[in-house]
Amino acid sequence: MMRILALLTTLSLISTAYVQVRDDFNGGFSQQWRWTLPQNDPFCTLFDNAVSFTSNSMIIQTRDGAMFQAFNSHKNVPTLRVGPNLPEEWYIETVFRTDWSTVPFYYYTQAGIVITTGARNYFQVLITRNATDQTDTINGSTNSEIEDGFAWGERVTNPWTPDTDWVGVRIERVGGEDPHIVVKFRNSATGGWVEYDGFNGGRYYPDSGFYQHIMNMLSQGARIGVYTDNACGCGLAQPFEFDYFETNLPVLPVDDVNSDNLVDDADLLAVLFAFGSSGDCLDEDVNGDGTVDDADLLAVLFNFGSGG
Ligand SMILES: [Ca+2]
Ligand SMILES: [Ca+2]
Ligand SMILES: [Ca+2]
Image (cartoon, rainbow, N blue to C red; front, top):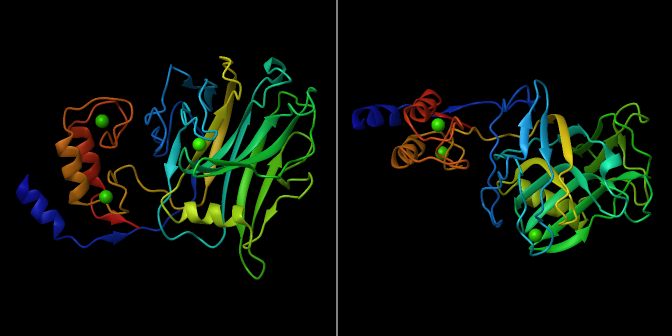
């Protein structure tokens, strides 16, 4: 093995271009998702058999738990890790559906996108039960926290009466002469992505704290993924079915065990040291089958020398 390591470390590192990442959840993950969430207890959020796949979607049932303020106990938060070298223009989007008729009017039950460095720091773009009005409506919303300091994002859509069709949320950065971040949504009436249409609109400009918070997280190894929340602590197991998740942000390969943007001998050694371990959330379990073994070693070797 040492001969192999010595040989491999002499290889020059190859840069790979980042491309659009899309997971259609066709019977399982096609991308490099992880269930770990820093600053959260449990660190491994995969919990209670709440996650399943159809041939073309992923279903997450809400579970009690929260990222809200210091209640850092959220469950079932799958994310991808963002690497360096963000493109000037980027986007993250997901599309999902649920049967809103089973969500009580008085809970802010919600789902959507999360950008996070941990349970104490995040930004979410969501579609939420409109519990403020306590009517059978839903609306787009945003939430944010910096060091557990919660801020409702003050970006909402006008409420609408839900149907069983897909809905979607999207966050994107527009570059050029007027750079800004914008949050968008879609439902069966919008005919595609449209900007948040409630008060304050959907745009964040570079002088806003929310803009800076989002960009800071993305430049510090953020994780991006899908989020579900019963927002009640009442045991409500609401199934949210996700059709797909897509982004053009650079996503670190799962073979990069130590998240330093290179697949090299350090990752190989990490796998070797964890050899024989088992569990749901081991970084060294590269192929995600629950055990660290020779298959994971081979997976790292196969991508050896790749990086951003
Ligand atoms: Ca928190
Ligand atoms: Ca690495
Ligand atoms: Ca494995």
